Length: 461
Ligand SMILES: Cc1ncc(COP(=O)(O)O)c(C=O)c1O
Image (cartoon, rainbow, N blue to C red; front, side, top):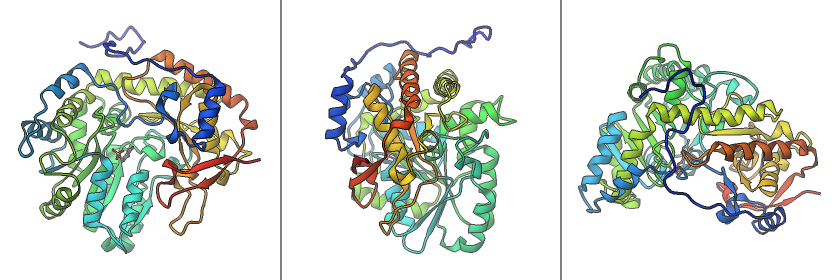
């Protein structure tokens, strides 16, 4: 039943059935914990975090119907009924002939890029997510980000800041199409602020791919949130059903990588899907080597069932209206309080502009890390640096500032209430009011790839 229009409050389209307790530490206790973790928020015990906005990945609350679906899980090694339930739910939205289940998104990326990339190749994307970039580069290929200029400017208002820069893509393809095994578009553009891509832009990318004979893949983790933005903001989409918009997105692509830990609201899972038979055969052979048999990939039958049910729930309009509104609620309050954020609000997260808030901390002293640590110490909020720590290290080991220094406050799906968000607003505003006192950081230990997960830091000065 539709919500009556005369009430403006958009409510959670669920009620709570089971709860998890939160553990409250003092500020002093949190300071001890973060020092012991080498100032790396990934190294904290999650019980020591009050509001965990590190990621929206695998952290959503599953529904009663997803838990019930788990009971239907059939663990047959080959040809499990749960596989067919999963396959049908995926193909209902993404009708690709080949669907290859994996334990999460990066496994799909690893298999695909192993099969099609390698030295001398170049993969364009609006903005590569960290694991996507790492998996491209691990094969010896080059990962190039070609988001529109507005997508690199946190303050620029644009309805589709995740769009690909078509002119730059055309220039790259004109020069090097033979070296480009695939063009990727990430929907929504996580590393660029969770910003959506328009259908018009996707069609433009498709045209270029057709002209230069290059396949187009979606990194579709947040396809439902992206489709909702299309419905809200793109002329011609306002009266369309979300699944119909999603199917048009799929029809423009030749394949996809997917993490089921995002929009499908599962705790684990992913897949790779495509049209091309020869690529699919190569990928399935790699799947068997590293993940499992093609009808379960890296997953248990129960996980396949939970994903299938989550896929049906995540395209529900009441859910999407609440989801996108609750992200905007946090963003608008911070904006009103004068905290610099990426505007407009993205789908799954609010991104604080640490470079703007901490102008006294140069990018190579990691303003995003400084802000993220302060949010934890002050209020037990765990966010994630998306900036020079994550992206600043070149392959030769030298460093350069990332395009932006952000702290992402990712909102797990259906997990926190409005009063949790009111608390977050209070803590962020408090930290912002004394941002000038926050120190920069140096890295004292780091691995060669994906350093943000395990690096250890020390405050400067
Ligand atoms: C856009 C994007 N692509 C790929 C991934 C990788 O997915 P996973 O964490 O399941 O490996 C993520 C995860 O956050 C993501 O946001």
